[in-house]
Amino acid sequence: MFTGISITRLFKPIRKVNPRNIVLFLAILGPGIITANVDNDAGGITTYSLAGAHFGYTLLWTMIPTTIALVVIQEMCARMGAVTGKGLSDLIRESFGVKVTFYVMIALFFTNMGNSVSEFAGIAASLEIFGISRYVSVPVSAILVWLLVVKGSYKVVEKVFLVACMVYIAYPIAAFMAGPKWDVVLKATVVPTFKADSSYLIMMIGLVGTTIAPWMQFYQQSAVVEKGITIDQYSFSRLDVIVGCIMAIVVAFFIVVACASSIHMQGLKIETATDAALALQPLVGKHASTLFAFGLFNASLFAACILPLSTSFYICEGMGWESGIDKDFRTAPQFFWLFTIIIVLSALTILMPDVPLITIMFISQVINGAVLPFVLIFMLLLVNNRHLMGSHVNGPVFNLIAWGTVIGMIALTLMMLADLLAPGILGRLFVL
Image (cartoon, rainbow, N blue to C red; front, side):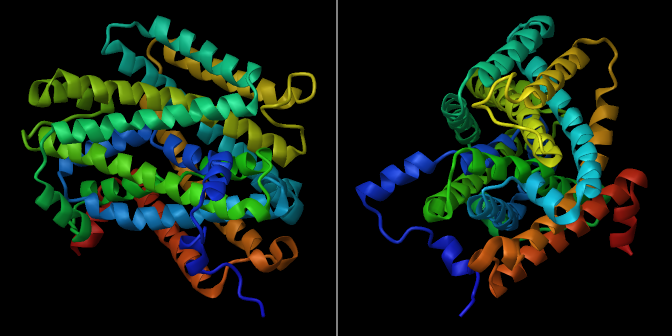
């Protein structure tokens, strides 16, 4: 009898813990952890820093539902990759046609260009704290990113990315150094708090929105396919997804705690993650400030690799071109030229004087918000297609959670866009 993927199977991915299963898990490890953690990029760290600095602990409760939403969405992508052996762009093209795929790819390209520019802005800002000019840090970082992906193999690149994930431990350390009141933190984590003002609501939407981005679904599925993970190995890949999502949220949690316990308590206001790193120094100490700034650099450099890479993956898949890190310019020219062009344009943008970075980020955020609901709907239609997925479609309970997540994301996205287009409207509506 058909039952599909159930919620029980999601959270019990491996029945036995033994040396063989541990070795298999370590072999499969990568796509889930890398995808989830890279979303803690310059924009994400800025959002979490502002949430803690401006609103203290009051937004910590959003971390629990956000974790559930992230796990549900990323698990579906990984499962589709393991079952079909195809990327998400491939499946969208085959199921919905070239025209639909083309418009989705165009929207995602411009969104990711804006995001890639912000990553190089994060590199420049974080290293300027250590006295390194952006005219040195940005070109050198761009060259390193390019060489890693173009000259490296998938195994080498994945190992470098996994090491980068480990550097995020800087934020939990910085949080503990800030000396938070853990009983207050725990209560704020499990007891929801609401404020009827637009700034609070927009920050709440931002916390959720910065955690689930369209590029993540495409990269996750492409990475599963490129690594050759099949449905027989999928129990371990599912665990990889769950561990990665939890790691990403834990890092976000500690960034909020670090800024809430120090900057917010002092009544200071900040505008960027760089401001947060500088503000921590007189409040908590030089070491905490250094850790925070180094974490920002690592996250920005990490994302500066992944975002252009994910863009190249999904555009090439969508257009039917060859793609993959293990290929080269001769066998996959479009893939590597796209990657190169995005890196060069993003780095050059940061080096130009008087570039309207705020405008670029604003436009990419609007496009991101407009594209995300469509991507999520495409995913759910595909993952419930029995011709594609067979017995691995969603089960009833899992579908309920998944569609609930999609509806919630659509509602949050529309709220975000409404406030961007008409500032203050959310606060007025909620007060009424």
